[in-house]
Image (cartoon, rainbow, N blue to C red):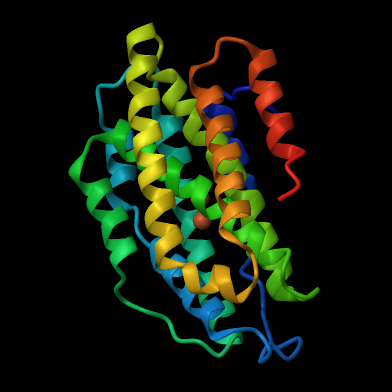
Length: 253
Ligand SMILES: [Fe+2]
Ligand SMILES: [Fe+2]
């Protein structure tokens, strides 16, 4: 995806095109029994987290924030639909791995609690942290899996989450035009991102250990994408954004 910021009309068109994708038929293409049980549990937790998001669509259509229009609301509706598609794909992945879906989890509760507590801008900050955490984690899981449909599906979700990151950053950029707003954003963003990284690292520690991912690569990747998101929101320099994108793209972890 280009570093260039998009208009809401362009985002609507972008999401609409992708909404035409059908759900993959993930029949058992290989034997996954050698993979640890913690992988299925980890994906089940993310599956739960991908399932919510109803109220944010209503708020996206009806608010008094500057720089928004109906195309933004429609884009947000497509975005939530796309997250539900991820939930369906992850549900198939969990079943392929012989795991069971869950209805409740403490980290999912925390994210839902944070999203309900606050207004649209802070909701999107929480969502952005979830995108950073999710896209890095799915990628690190996928590259440790053998070539398979499971791996391909996780990598497809990674690409979707990357687009979501740019979408949320475009929104937050439109809401942080002044210097003090940028400062407030950076302070809130770093706090929310660090908290999200901590709880997810704790909750998914068994999969991180069993798949030999290591906490250092996870944290390094989160830090790299977190920095990219921050630059996309607050930087006035296209060169800074491009530099952050290159660091993230060249990250070897
Ligand atoms: Fe997702
Ligand atoms: Fe996402």
